[in-house]
Image 1 (cartoon, rainbow, N blue to C red):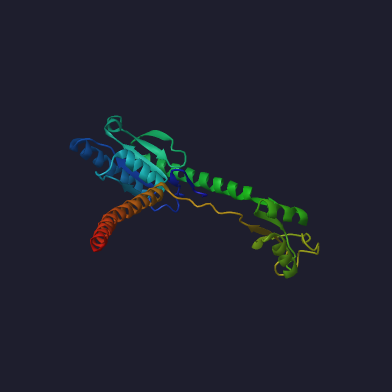
Image 2 (cartoon, helix red, strand yellow; image 1 turned 90 degrees about the vertical axis):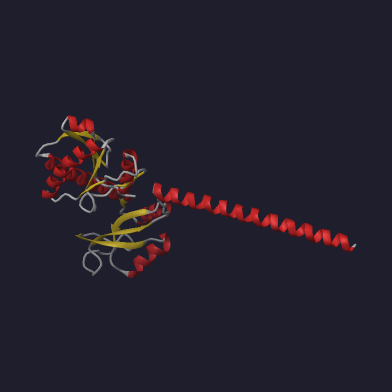
Length: 265
């Protein structure tokens, strides 16, 4: 996954439905009311900056469970605020990308700090994706090198094409690769296959990407994996119960049949 890790998703802030999740930590009703009152003021600040936020004040899960749950969903920033934070007029900000924790003072500039962190996360994810994208593309200028690369390692190869169907078919026949993209950049070069001019035809004068994917790896997030495991355990347990139930019935029927046969003899 481009935007993900072993903990789950990592959503870019610009597309994240929830950009900031706020998790209050309290152990009695008095502290609960105090913390929620402060959170209301924080939400008002975030709303002014059009930052999409959500308060997870549910009481059927522990704070630790909530931390893991929202990390798995990929929310860019998590805010934690408990009794000790309230005493120090501060809160804890956790970035999904690095999971680093920062103690931030609660003041009128809090929303500016959160917005800055969101922009930083957006830039970090973009640069990370761009780096991975560039690492997957290999520029090759000779045909033998192109075939060798695609047949041995796959991935994406950047080269030049004249636009003729014959050259495209030759690449596909010898490597299994397809032409995936014609870039907008105009060039003055020669086709990697036929060595003809590659500047003026409809599909030429551009750098092309020839590529195919050798293998695809499936990703199961922790929640899905647990669900599948539970389903398998339930299936085997049900199967065992059915076998056990009918086994005694079959055994009883077999004994009855055997006794009747013995009487007849």
